[in-house]
Length: 439
Ligand SMILES: [Ca+2]
Ligand SMILES: [Ca+2]
Ligand SMILES: [Ca+2]
Image (cartoon, rainbow, N blue to C red; front, side, top):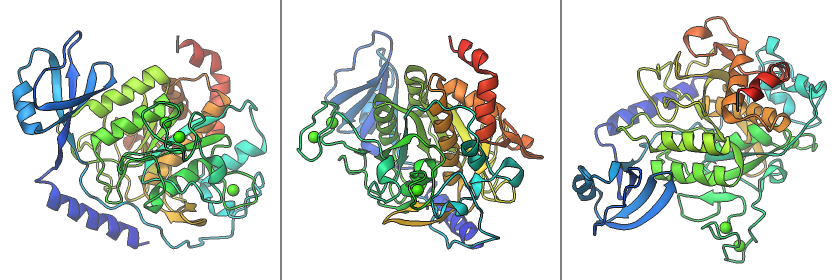
């Protein structure tokens, strides 16, 4: 039990050492034009790519010169640098320790599912996954694509290979961009780090996240994911050092939404923001235009209040963003979890989460990184039953249907832990009201 706290503590120390020199990309910047504004003509901009609305990503020979040249330009609303998140440590695989009799989840035949304690009922501090499948409240099932924007996914894993999204418009391995989307042979997703289209896992983190959401249920193999009809779109954007850039996050989110992802899991974050709003604008854009909900980890800084000590993207304000704190098997807030009465929305199991790891293996990991996909899995299953709900509605469903936990009111807006069974029931009971409020 001591290993994880020490790990995070050491990463905090590492961060403070870096804090004075936040790095940025010297070659890329974001420009937001005014309505009818023209892209400034300057030798400093070597290429410009339209992102959405009035937002562009530009390549530049010198971002500092470009920024000072455009400071008072009448055509633009703003120019933002592309900042790195800074290096920090991702959760590592822990030794699995049994803390009681093996659990039995009779809705599933997967041999290791008994280790996924979150499948227990709300009264046992779980989120009622087994209960939801034993006596289904609703049978409608639509396939829901969940983008795992992370360290890549082992898409060959025995318990993930049948749960992977595949780009129908692309022919594998012919070195041609068949669907003309700007990416050659993007079958499972993309890799913004290597600028290619192979999102194979470089670290266990993304594979673990993917299994929690959608490991194949009832295949007599491994565990079971929370959502029965979700497909994982793998997007490798987070380096093993956790030092992702805003430009890569924006590219990932736009790719995900453009290719049909209704949920994006975001188990990463940074502890600084120099005023950059491009990621927030992107979340609002994909939420309002595509109905995509971004589910994000609150962060692991031992009850840091992210209402006052902001972290990103979790501290952004958006109706299309659901922010998740972590709970333990005993129903408490995990000691490492961040909090925020305004900016944290819900809590979900994140301590000692058993899931898939690369190479047909399985293991435990702990962090709000794990609480986020637990919640993303619930969101995906709700959307699979009720695909007509938009991102704001499904966020409301999750928040209104939580299991209230004493003391959680001061930590998060909903004051409780997500619950699949209660969320399904809430949606059925409030269906007409939810749908009419979307118009
Ligand atoms: Ca393509
Ligand atoms: Ca191809
Ligand atoms: Ca399985």
